[in-house]
Image 1 (cartoon, one colour):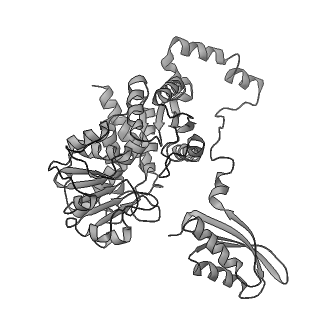
Image 2 (image 1 turned 60 degrees about the vertical axis):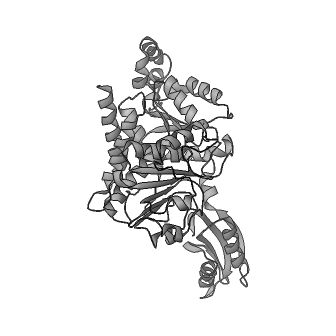
Image 3 (image 1 turned 30 degrees about the horizontal axis):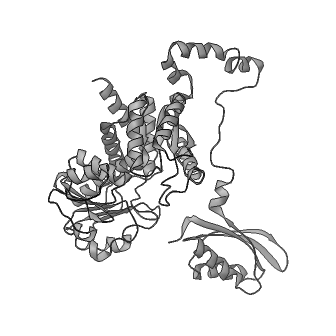
Length: 462
């Protein structure tokens, strides 16, 4: 489907007659594009120059829309601009001073000689760094570029646009200052060493787009070695939002988490974290599936993370395919690959089933086919109802962690964050098309932050 992610602006010169502009918009519509804007740039007695903005579904579709316009008689396509690339020119974030530096007096306090007094105070009491420096409100967004979105190992430079975007979201939704740290190494020891060395600057570490199973080891080691929270968003952010969405979806269908059977496709970082959080919340049973089928106690060649899942899920020892696993299941959660299931597969699930097909941009099952059989359907797409988006979690989570000056991120904090997101929707507003709040709902991040801060303070008081 056309989306803003593949939006283009085309500068076109066309005849200045009553049907000229209409011919352009008709050609775009016939080619499957969606016209979003049409602005007149210039004109004379014979010609009109317009900037026509339209959404397309992907690069080849954009090319076909442009080709349809070029094929029109007496129409000159002068320039085509990809609006996504235009948005990224020069990057998406910047550093802005919080203090004025207009006079010698201000400079003397912000920098030398006045700053020396602050340095000495921190040297005497290192904890003052949380109060007197950017550490109080700053997060490092750390990646090695080995699992960028759904695109795979693209490397640190290609990962930078995603990390910039993450930093922008931190600021936009929770007022947290975040900075990309893209590391040109995939050696786990080296990554841990680098992040440990950088940690004095930051109040928290957000790990991002690091491939499994290395991400589990890196997170665990950093949690042991640092005195600031370490949060792997691909794991914990996804799991929090999925639990929140599932909480409300179960309210819609009138089922209890402790009585349902859940099938999860994908046993990587996100899938593992989702299953661990559901187990902590008391789910009835889970079957974890990877590309070879269901994980069970007898599965061979499993890494330690998958072995743990095999030992703590799938009580009946099912050993078949994904399609077989979802027969009679109440919930399907996909964090794997596109087009693994069909509508006929969803039809074999239990009555009032729930489908979260989160592979992005192409889900595990066509959401339109899934809705023919499931009571509630969610995806990771912004152009479908019930978008499961990590931005509902990580800004508020870190806002809460920083406000509490927490030293670690814990399971009770994750559960508190999920409950806060679920409750933000409101019991009177939950329905099959609304199980999570909008990512632009201004009440979400403060609610999550408050819940995480309270959970952190309860743990600190023990």
